[in-house]
Length: 168
Image 1 (cartoon, helix red, strand yellow):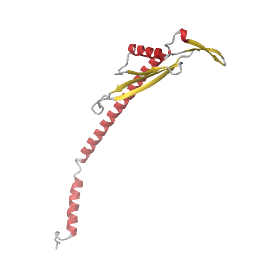
Image 2: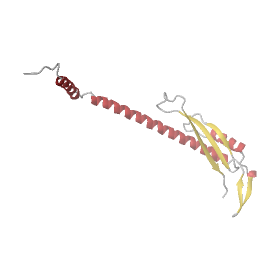
Image 3: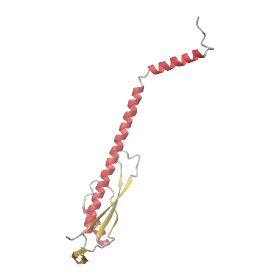
Image 4: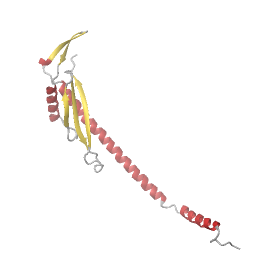
């Protein structure tokens, strides 16, 4: 004789067990969900790597421009501005740099040099603190190549380069 399932707790557990068995046996759509998730994750990872690479290259291009401008500023002295200093090895000729000449040379360099894809280059600082080295600071704005809607204003970049003129 069979027992009634309505009043017996075993009957309820059997119904839950049968429902769970049906859910476990129907896993056809779960691999589709996992595939879509991993494809989305891979796409996001690719976009992040592309953006990071673009930022790195943009900073390197800006640093190259700053190096060239600092070198131009370090060579902006006139021969009248070369002084001789005493050194234990003997007298050494040293150029004396002035901040206004360093800035003018850096501006001239930036006007003549190709910017290599760097947009909105701005000379934020140029000068000589010690009279022997030229310091140039450049600023720019980086715009991500694909994720523009996340950063519409871009990311500000600033680099500084120092160059020194030495006679040997």
